[in-house]
Amino acid sequence: MRMKIFSCHHAVAQDTIMTDLFSSLISGVHGTQDYLGDLDGDNIASDNDHSEMRHQYYVWKNLLHRFDYVGFEHYRRVLFTDIQSASVVSRRNPELLIFRGHFAQSISRPYLCASHQLFSDFWMMRKTFSVHDILDLKAALSKNDITLTRPLFQDREAMAEQWKTSLPEHVWNIMIEAAMETELLRNHPLKAHMRIETPSFFNMYVMRSDLFSDYMEFYFEVIRRIRHKVEPTPRLWGHCAERLINIFVYARSTIDPNIRVGNMPFILKTSEYIEPQK
Image (cartoon, rainbow, N blue to C red; front, top):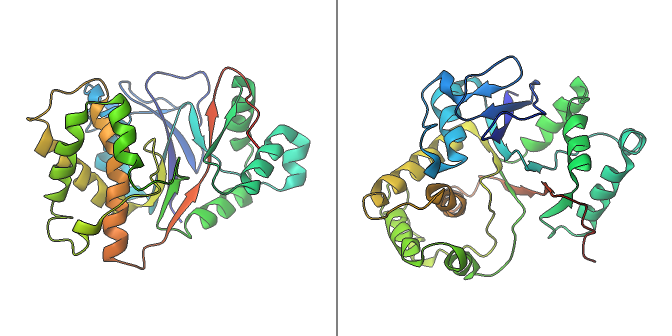
């Protein structure tokens, strides 16, 4: 199984990773032996309105042919790639084992906050993954065609309402209208009934490479349709992408019911550890 999860950075980080499964990818720089850089190929590094979609564009245009699955996460939000045995984790960092317990107690909990130190410990633990650990993690992730982060909330109107609390309200309708006119949705039999009740955010996922390519075609088709109608605010297209991935997954999984969609939690780096709510 050829799989790679890219950790997306906007600047060179103190901690980077380059293993068989994980690679740091930094926008706006050339790569070194310690990380990949998107200036080493076809890129949109200078267009920060796309935010972390710049990294995904680079993978799409330059690296996708190498992999059966690709995944993406952020420098301060990482997928909870928890695969080692309890005995190993408890010996190396028992606090991370507690995280496993919190996520197991509530499958609706999307993330947990970690201090800088604990976040770094989790990050460094990946470097200790054995060949067997990596094979197990690849096998677990490849059970789904698409793995999204766990949804932040469950409400059929929440995705639109959440947008309007912090982003230009008029852009929402323009974006949705453009999405409905794309090749994917123009003649979709369930277009009129589409409701996203459990959206996933942050442009983080692991996806079969052919589906990822289809998603990137969909995303950029929407952006091409709206960019002449909208004056972009910082990172606006990246914010659009956080919503468009949910529309894409709905559209593809209702066309092809054999597409397997799963969810996984993530860890958020904060200045201090925050005890999860009961």
